[in-house]
Amino acid sequence: MSTIDKKIPSLDGLRAVAISLVLIMHLAVGFPQWMFRYLQHTGLSCFGRTGVTIFFVISGFLITTLLLNEKFSAVGEIHIRNFYVRRALRILPVSMLYIGLLWFLNKPFDFGLETFFLWHALTYTMNFAVASMPWILAHLWSLGVEEQFYLIWPWVTKLQLKTIVRTAFYIIGYAPMARIIVAKTPEWKFAVLTLSPFFQYADALMIGCLLAISRRMSFSLWDSHLLKSRFLRFLSFFIIWLVTYLSSKHGRGFGYFTVPFGTSIISILSAYIIASTMTFDKTMLYRFLNHPLMMYVGRLSYSLYIWQQFFLVPRNFAGMPMWWRVFPMNIVLTFGVSMLSYHIWEKHFLKLKGRFKAA
Image 1 (spheres, rainbow, N blue to C red):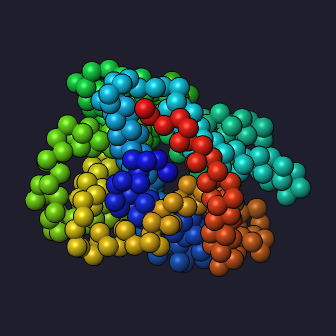
Image 2 (cartoon, rainbow, N blue to C red):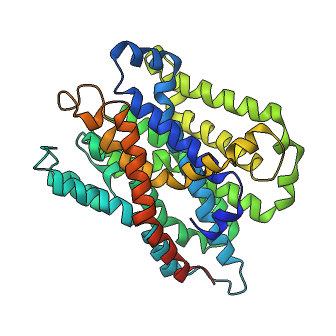
């Protein structure tokens, strides 16, 4: 966790909410058919993607905040090399441990992972995998989006502020078209050529980036009464639920609205919730997000996201699931392994990040 991360309230709590949505969705796909249909009917089975969207908004906000801190520091320069080293220390150790374990267990447990997919996982291009992704590696598509964002955005942030903002708005404008391309193009290669596997999620990242820019340039606006409105917070949560619910009803004609614009709307409202919970207040939401348990789950969120796919599997996954993939043992093992991963492995690399912090 970065230094700036420690100074901003509620972010770990928001990460805890996001990872909980992902876990609930992945638990749901293993439930009996009648229960899964109920979750689909209520829209709860689609909230995992909403959780990932929240992660993207938070990531865009934090990365841009860190880069702008360097840009406007006394040195006045973004150290690209140090940025990449810090990101590598944050992302690679846990994900490579997971991928390496899968490679080691592939034959003994008959996971059936082809070298093709392992290479996509190792190069963080799983979102560009043309063939149907194996479940046990499928969640790494989001890491691919993150890593591709890291490759691009530091160089953009070195430009003038107007250019940064303009670039963010261009990407936000293209993202709905990228989602339409993926939804309407039967030939996946065309989607790959238009970079849609990245850009269809990039608006969430860019909205987080714009949030960071607004915080840096107009900090006084963050004391606005609009950000302290309980009604607007409630309305934001309701609209996020409604859009997610409608996203589960594509077959009933809602796809014309939710496919191009659903992620953008959820991202904007998530950014509002993030902004409205960063300054101290006495509301129940603030206390909830900053409760020690929520903050701890938020710190575990990356390890949880990586390891949960090994234990939480869909119905009829490779026949009858083994005992460690049956509820409630699968959720116990998910948290247990993630805690071990964080405390024994991940934390050591997070401490090394301090050697490459911004000047």
